[in-house]
Each structure stands twice: as structure tokens, then as C-alpha cells.
Image (cartoon, rainbow, N blue to C red; front, top):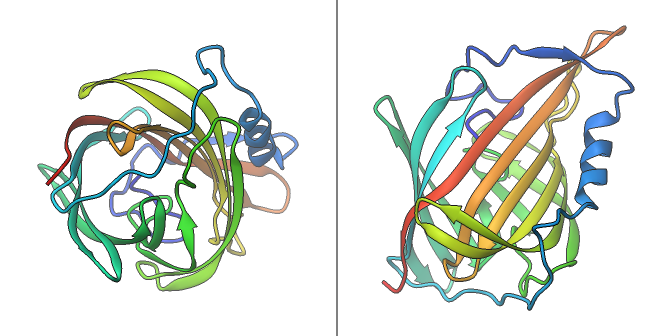
Length: 251
């Protein structure tokens, strides 16, 4: 979660140079799209979930970790700090004994992001709002977006391809409790291609619980390929797990 596309990660993972040889490269995105069509036996059909109500003071706290052999662990807090005609303002803080990152998002409506992060801790301003969740969320629902954006953290601009599919309902247990959640598969191709590397390709699972009004678990994997002219080397750019530890609704 803390390593982002073309910018240098805020944390320099010492174990990220885990490079593997790839065969038949189109691979990662192709495989991810195949997986996106697969629904595990624990996922069931059910009713759609409508958009949650939001109030100032709504707060969600997560435990996050990223890395392979040497993991970095942090606490991540999302809190609604304002609601006005411009939208819903959310403050996000990532903290551990050596880390203190603060950022803000602006949501046009629940699930609809005008300013916020897409993969990481970057701040992006979207020309057309990002549909993080398209309400009502219903099993089998899917949507695609081509997102023109300005990355205010990396000082770049480009276009991102994003695909989302709602697999169905699944019971999820976290430190905050056990919830009925909708499992959502997200596939993205970022806008960070350079002459020496391909664009970052992301394969995410998100569990959204209507009771909580937010995600209760996220699993994120991302990678890109080095361009050396003869072989294709895969660099794993992200291996993140996020789970809800507590929440407060209703101001």
C-alpha cells in the first residue's frame, strides 16, 4: 500500500527487489481478468446494498501491513471531517512508531471520489470522479472506467484503466467483528509506464460491509515489468493487507 507507481515509495522496502522471470508476459493482467470471472464457493447471491449515510465523526480504523519477508505494519484511520456543498471530506492518517502520513480525500457522494488515492498514499485529482463503489452494489454488477487524472503527489498526469466486479456476499471476520460483506474484485492498469518499465498492474480484493459503511478487508497485489530488451523481469510493487479493527458511526 505504501509503494506507488512512478514515484519513490515513502518507505523503501528492502525486500522489494524480489524479481521473478515471467513467461508469456501479458500474463498478470490476463490472469487477473480470468480470476475476476471466478467466484469461490463461499460467495453467495443476495440483495443489493444501497449507499450509506455519512455523518461528520464517522470513523474507521484499520490494521495495515505491506511487504514480503520484512513486513511494515501501521494503523490507518479514516474519518469524516466535513460535509458541505462541495462534498464529503475525509481525513486519512497512517501511523506507526516511525511513520506519520496525513492526507485528505473529497467524495462527491459515498463511493464517488473527486480527490483521493487509487493504489497507494498518492493524492489524485480525477477529471471524472472515480467510482470506488457504484451503488447500489449488487452481486454480478461490474463497471469500467478510463480515469484521466492529475497525480498531485508525483506531479504527473495520465489515464488509468479500472475494472470492478461485485462477486457476491461473503461472511468476513476481522478484529472489529464478523460482517456480511460484498466481495469486489478490482483490476487496474496505472499511468506510470516509463522507457525502462511497463505500467503497474493491480489486482485487488475488497470486502465492503453495509453495516459498517466501508470496506472491512482489502487484499492488494501489484507489479510491473522491467524492459531490458531480451527478458521480462517482474517486480512486485505491492503486497498489502488491510483489515478493520474498530469503527464508529453516527457522529
